[in-house]
Length: 368
Ligand code: NAD
Ligand code: DAU
Picture 1 (cartoon, rainbow, N blue to C red):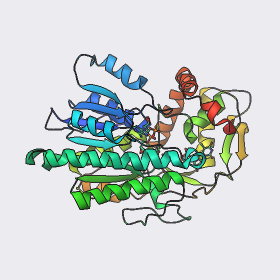
Picture 2: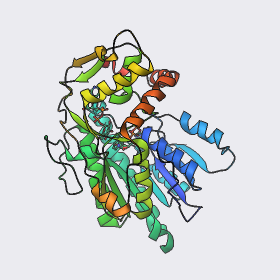
Picture 3: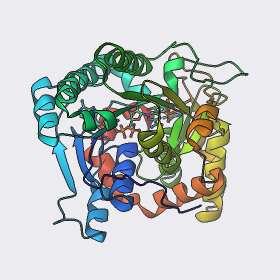
Picture 4: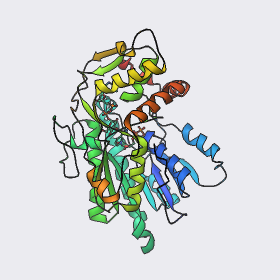
């Protein structure tokens, strides 16, 4: 993997607000901002079941940042307009990355209202607060202010065997999660056109990497395998996802915050389509070498009832972002998958604590 520092914010006093900064992708962004820039970072998160702050805590310790005043965690729920508004006034941001959302499709099927409240109402409250904040900024700060709305490829629905999603794709969400994210994109778009808030939207494919809450396919498979439990594959395992290592996604977001065009949207993908069965079998093969047992981990695979409304295929054409801002994938898929499996094997204590804290087995017992 190339390890280059390619982000330079000219204004070192820049105040950056990350919503959902204690989640999987948000915390990776916060770590990168702390490690590779000099900006001040505010992390707004309601701290829910999927949040984790240990990776940021240990970085702050390593970098000796405790007393530097460069980082602040703000436990705020965007569902409260008053609190959101107060915190926007308090942080007075120059740049916002909006990642806060309920993110798991299966949970949206169990409890759609939670997704409408957190994702749609949460985004509305953020936009209303940001609108007020933006209107009060000096012309100079207005010119450089950006809100980056981090959305998903799922808003476009499901593909057949051919074709790709791109910036021209029609919105056609199929799950309560993707419908809530599509609503956020529409709201964001409206606040740009009607109120002039400078916004950029990204639609990204499936991320993977260390520190992901172990309910998503890749970390769940690793944990089930090393605990010698059945690995659940929904339906026939032929559904396809387009995988991207989380650090490549973060590089795209940072580059867009500097070079992206206001009002535009950018599709981000890994050009790495795999069926779910292929992904699970690859993880099993890695584990067969890393942690050999009597028989292959593949014997643990169990086909289970399909996800209702299960989207068949996602595949993202990221040519626009590559061409317009020279973003490129810097990691190699199998290396990153190996790195991810290795991380989960070495961090089982973190997984146990994270799952226990989230009362995961109590809540979604159907999976085990
Ligand atoms: P995650 O579940 O790991 O983290 C989401 C974070 O948002 C959590 O820490 C949670 O506490 C916080 N949050 C949720 N509702 C909130 C609210 N009302 N107020 C404040 N904080 C709140 O999710 P993730 O995988 O890191 O995804 C982050 C964002 O990226 C989401 O918007 C998701 O839709 C989007 N996205 C994810 C992927 C992926 O593959 N994981 C791909 C494309 C886009
Ligand atoms: O495409 C981007 C989206 O990717 C993000 O917007 C979402 O936040 C993120 O959760 C992810 O959604 P998916 O539904 O694609 O991810 P998940 O890991 O839940 O599932 C990946 C595929 O694996 C999907 O086809 C369902 C399947 N699956 C999932 C689980 C948890 C299984 O077969 N078995 C499982 O146990």
